Amino acid sequence: MNNQRPPAEFTDINEAVGEKWETETTPYERIRHVIGHTYRPLSAEAVADDARTAPKTARKHLNTLADEGFVETTPGEHGSTLYRRSPESLVVEQAADILAHVSTDELATRIQEMREQLTEYQAEFGVDSPEELAINQTNQALAESGSPQEEIDPERIREWKTLRRNLAFANAALSIGNAEQFVDGDRSTNDSVPA
Image 1: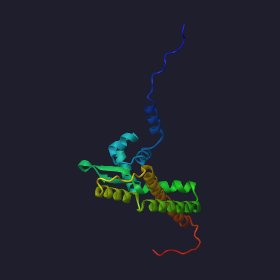
Image 2: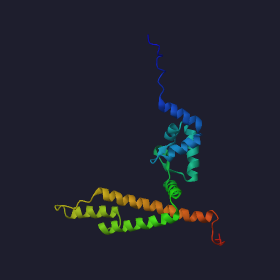
Image 3: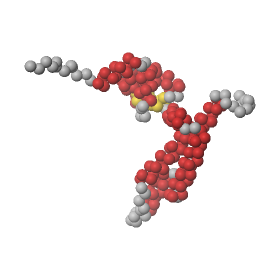
Image 4: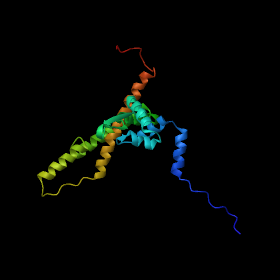
């Protein structure tokens, strides 16, 4: 004879996690989280649905986040407003992450190395940017419609683009790190800038 009990009713794990998230956070925190991981414009209703709150609440908090510079707004269809994470807040977040792991001295060294590598890419391809390279290739293909064109490794182009992006974030981090010295009161002089 088998004394095993029947299995308990199946619980949707996603719903259980969502309910826990809802009880442990405020609507503002959930909305900030949702929009913080969104890179395309969304309506307040879509954010509200993902954040498990009412559209009116989402709109209120999204407008607050827009006032803080965390979110930017764009016009949607029929006069609606769409919301997405602002590029500035992404740059600041990336810069803060870099500064949490790398000293400003080490960062300055890495920036110099990246600049040197960028110069190597420019010398190798004879142009200043991957975009300029693409334009040159297109123009060359149009001018020489019948002759074969030299194939450029797409992985090299991706590496070049990634290097430029990383250099931009590193420069932003270094600028913020240097500026923080003045905000934190680590000034070497007591000079003040007139307002």
